[in-house]
Image 1 (spheres, helix red, strand yellow):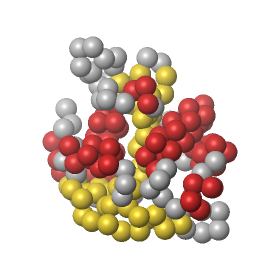
Image 2 (tube, helix red, strand yellow):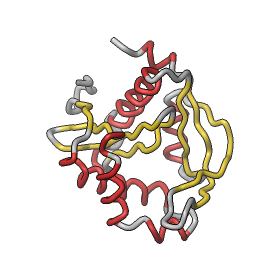
Image 3 (cartoon, one colour):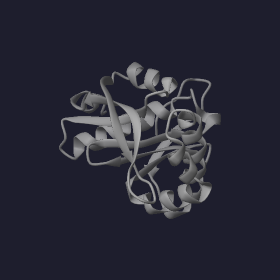
Image 4 (cartoon, one colour):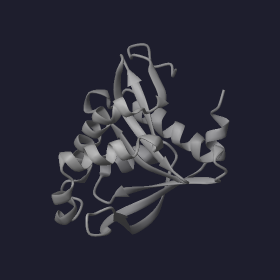
Length: 174
């Protein structure tokens, strides 16, 4: 359990289970639209339907950790290898420490898997997310094209690669 600020509810992190897939899909779709519309190719927007998020959320449960606030899923992170691949927080819980808790968890998971640094991709135009990662000590290594999953193969998305040495994550452990 993560201790919140005095006026905030506690944040509990736990592995996702199949019953969380619907909540994860909704948070993912809503957050993805907030951060990506206008910043990614129209081809990708066309295939990111509610159904696509539902299918992908269900398929990715094993990679997912959820943050629970007040008994409800408030956000999630998916970690694959040394990448914090997906990090989204429900709009009602943004600014309440959920993203910070999930990102810190991803850093620890990557460290525990034996990697020295963690990385993630941020859509170039997603200024809010880029500012957040920079405040968390992540470094922008520059622009690159991220191969987003599409129905007929990868769709190239202009992104920035953010990295962080995970020895810093180890220092945060109790």
